[in-house]
Length: 232
Image (cartoon, rainbow, N blue to C red; front, side, top):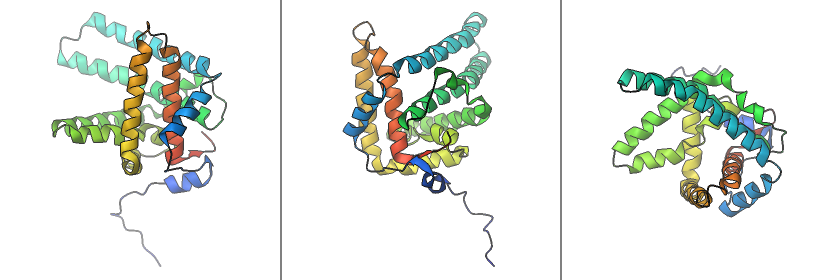
């Protein structure tokens, strides 16, 4: 009779999840293919994503404004404002990401799905908190470790939400998988930053296309790296 080791590190359920997924993992994804697919997928979907973006910005503004009147001079008030804004807006960020992921696998989506993940508010908040702490420590340690973690942890949030992973499990699953294509991910993020900067130049008009494109692009890359469960 086999015994379970009580000291064994929790294992990722990624393999089990992706076996029943709409899209299987594609660790050999190509940057140009991801760019082309994302551009194709935003056709006819920009209004949905912009609806979600405007909802996010409206709520962010509504939550942030009171703290401007209350003042952020004290460290305590600054911390309180960051916690409150984070608790309200981080689940919305998760919802926006999941709208993109739904689009990447052909699932129906609408702008109001941005509200669907408030049930995971605490987990999402502490994931972001732990991730930021680790990245800041990495930046203090000669900067490069922090840059590495910024890229390596970039898919932790959708893993927590879409695959119901724990906080540390999501961070480590993201890091280990992205570690195999870290340079490609780094290049992709640099390209995306350049796209946003260029799009913002002509009075920001290009952002009408660039912001939805960025959301869907990251969703396509997530789908390629981790697969997507049938029920999302």
